[in-house]
Image (cartoon, rainbow, N blue to C red; front, side):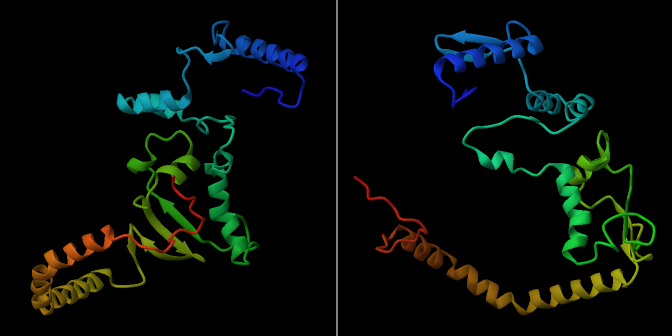
Length: 229
């Protein structure tokens, strides 16, 4: 842990002592264990990720919801892993999906929020959906859990286009029936082709395995490959 990497040894040790003192005040005197020149966290300490995982494994969903009351590992910094800092949290994703999308479409004044004088583009979901229960944080549930199966009603500029989960602007049953008829007709027409494909499968598979095993003298990688010893 680099507490103060740009400081000299004396100032670094002083910063380290201050940091350890602050950690022990919050987590307890035994939170940090020195092992030689290495400092380790006491094994009895847990993170919200561990508590969340343990609760899910034990099917204790009330405890899981309590552990998931905010961003997991909030405030944690991982050296050498800039991707960790770029992870999108639920609030950011929600903003991108609503007001962000409206800006991209050039309709920031008309879409992206439920306010007076904006278009009534709304999606109503069933609150009793398994993906929304138990509910600790609505935004996190919508971003991380909801799959779209809870959608009940959709309005576009005030016009209902989905009601009780069914599209109102087309005859869904007729479309499904026609699609099934087309699939059945295609399957019948392709019967001879499928039979030929099954007979050819062993030969094509053998050719593919041979091609994979054959060495190639070309570089298929985007970056230079260092020579092997």
